[in-house]
Amino acid sequence: MIRTGIVNVSPLLDDKIYQKYYAKVPRWRQEKAGRLRNPADQALSIGVWTLYEMLRNEWNVSEKAAYNLSHSGEYALCSIDTTEANDVRVGCDIEKPGGTREQIAGRFFTAAEYAYIKDAENEAEKNIRFYRLWVLKESYVKAVGRGMGLGLHNFEIGFTAENIPFLRKDPIGEKQKYYFKEYQYDPEVGRIAVCSTCPAFAGEIFIETFS
Image 1: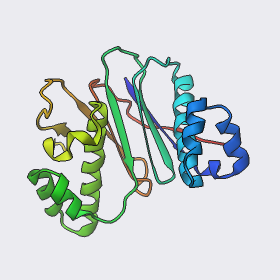
Image 2: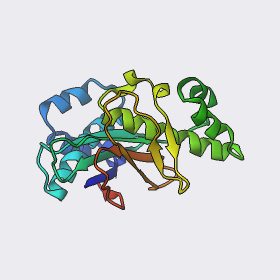
Image 3: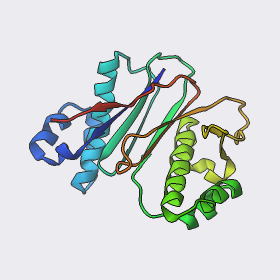
Image 4: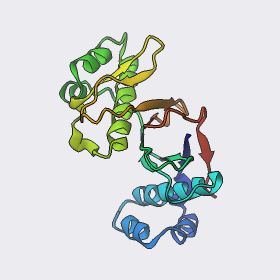
């Protein structure tokens, strides 16, 4: 099963709390955070790895388990395959909402995806649809391990009659089935999507805290 956890990293902006968790992460993660100048970015870097370690401990999974990390705004996200299967792939994405970005959609999304956004009744709904597609597409490219180099226009996300997302076409010809899960944590936090070759997802998102 693919389980997902989320944490607000704001407490790590307190230097005492930051140092507490900083001391527990691997040296390479400390160095990565150290290369960042913005304290908020440092908090996200340390916070997202700490979340991963906390969830592994919570769900009793080893380092062999497939996982993926994401962060946006004040929140860090982590998805893990708790079955530790060898062939499972997983990707996750969280995006804090901003303004509707029709130009980006027109340039990087497929014609059908762009129409899905344009057909919304108002700007608020356009915003929701844009970020919904964005995190779904991002979670997929992370799951396949190709990143943005795959090209967001090279594949398409569709929706069933029940409004469930699915991959409309296989852009890399591997004939591998991918599944999606969306979580409605908090509209102010952002859209959350998880993609995996495993069809089983936890029904709820797990919430961690820093103190």
